[in-house]
Length: 109
Length: 114
Image (cartoon, rainbow over all chains, first blue to last red; front, side, top):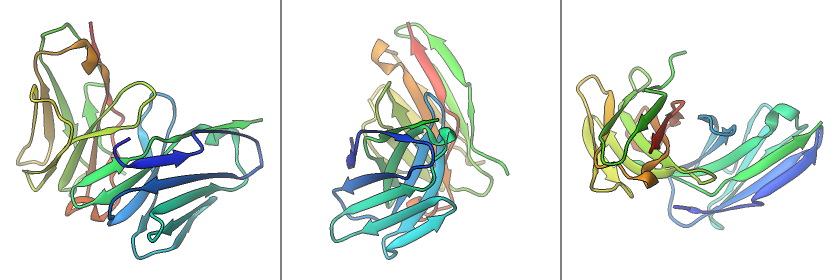
């Protein structure tokens, strides 16, 4: 990827469980954004966390950012079948948004 | 709410032909980004524009060019198409400058080169 690694690469969980995925990056950032993508479809913006923020919540999503470790995590609580998708982190710096390799999440009913 | 509009949604071209992809950003958004996503890959940054000027450039082949017009819409021109150019092409826009705010993506153009 252009920016770093996401782990795990794939995650399979039962409906109702929590899903956690991590993102590491290499450069300085203005912010870090998380996106969801269903197979072959568009990228849906989930949440943006700025470099001076440590944690942010949006509905069932919780994002953390540790700039000293150059890492971020996305937690999806009480997962649903509709959460099945690929999740990407993207670091924003100046006029470029750089994506990680993505985590494929499968939520089993 | 208005979203980023890309056209066409699907495009089939033959090798060595030319393709033009269009992107209409969210109203008032002044920054536009273009990305290429191959099957099973993460989106690769191609180029960005802010206030109609090129602001950053990624792994965009010399056969590709892009511009942002006075109404802020953008076009990606791809010439001498190769089989390897087959991919999803996404456009995104943000209220800049640059990545200072959320970037929203269009539904993409699926380009197939045969």
